Amino acid sequence: MTDPNPAGDELRAFIERYESLELEKKEATDAMKEVMAEAKGRGFDVKALRKIIALRKRDRDDVAEEEAILEMYKAALGML
Image (cartoon, rainbow, N blue to C red; front, side, top):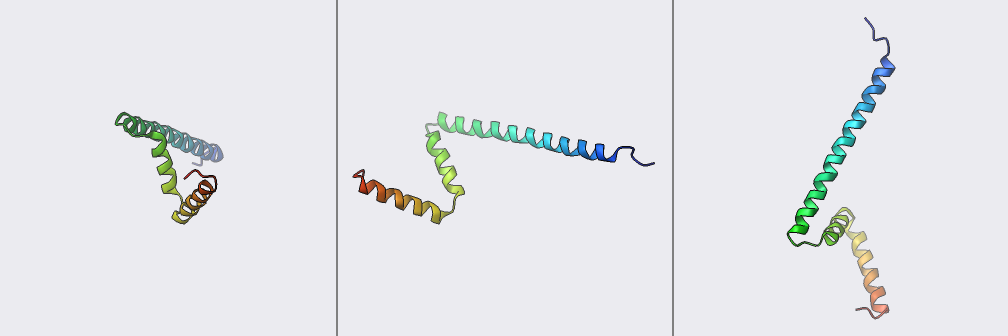
């Protein structure tokens, strides 16, 4: 016997997979918030932690170039 509505079943499967991923994403986000709250409770600066995490995602050469430019600009403004 053939399925009377294969397109509907396939569509439902896509929607259910997406909804499942949304739930996983929310759970992961909640877990990340808990990690940051724990770090803050232990005395770490959460803003600095987030900056380090962002830097670790970037290419080392790009980070080094950006830092060199910032140092040059700071020196030009007498901020060093």
